[in-house]
Length: 479
Image 1: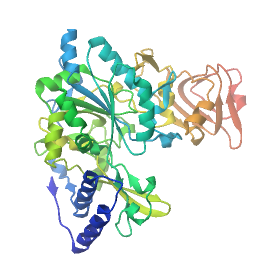
Image 2: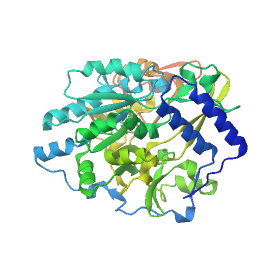
Image 3: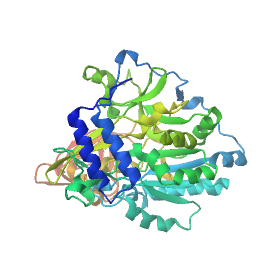
Image 4: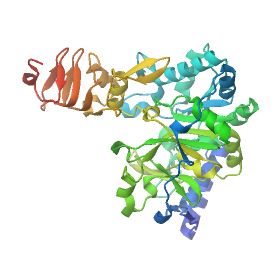
């Protein structure tokens, strides 16, 4: 990919003023100051990747390996223990549950049977350690937003059969758009003056925190990185075994794309290397082609397996120059800019990097209450901390669920269901307005439940709704 790096005199002045202001910020470390100014320098220089569309190639099965072609996991428990003793699990835990109306880390939202995301993660790893006598540690990468709460929460696991370590990702100052100066240097010294710079920051933060060297000294070789809200992102011994056998430095799990996944990046072969192609990099005239399921069939799950020695080598060489994602915001009426990076974009810098085309079951994120409805329903069961798909469902795809704003906050969502409906035979459900569900409701096929404006619509206990549009109580009679 072609790269441009020129700095105009005006931008050079901007950068000089910015560096002076950043140097005076006492709240962040020298590593954070350097990381931030390097990011801004790259942004101002216009460093950008230009995709030559004609050079994009579909990756072969050697580059994006079909999951079914992986060798089986070794049988003996001692061989499995040897595999697990090389592994670290790292969950990205910097996000708040604000989208779903919660305060504090998103990972402490109750998902099922009174257990949180974090509870399930701990149970899964604890079971592995107990079964095989291994020592797989759990690392949580927090942001300054989630650090204090997480520290308090992990106390409850101190007697568990698992080592839990926490570290913070970088804290960068938001940029004021008008004059390109750090927001905190202009008086906004509270949390609103700062931002965590995306999960691409996981690699330098691992090194800067000292965690990476400590893990290498314990003989750890690979880190499995995943979002804390992806319930499908569990340790997979077949993947770990494959990477160790083939000495792959980086592996991205991809999965078949559906129409709902148009935003997810896809893996391509480009100039002899595998890399992530995001929609932001796609020329306007090719956007519809990029979204096509026929042409680009896979997308990034953000489940990543990375060799720790390779991370150390590349971070120390300052070689991980991932694409910059500009994220404009407005805080207290002031337009600010956040510059972020994504961990998946690092794939092109690692040797022998591959994708593995995994089953859809390894991608089960909970981003909204509609996802929470799926995982709390009879569509799934809970076994040893794993959320398992109900085999009674014939359709391999999950139903499409659209809930109105009345259900957006978790507290409101939970209060509107006496119990979560049975949806094993559901294709699609749309709910809008002031709707309340009774006990033991079953919804099948294609259904919509649309309360009329300013009217409360109560679905009675044990109602069965199948291929029907409900707009009032009269339509529920006899059901």
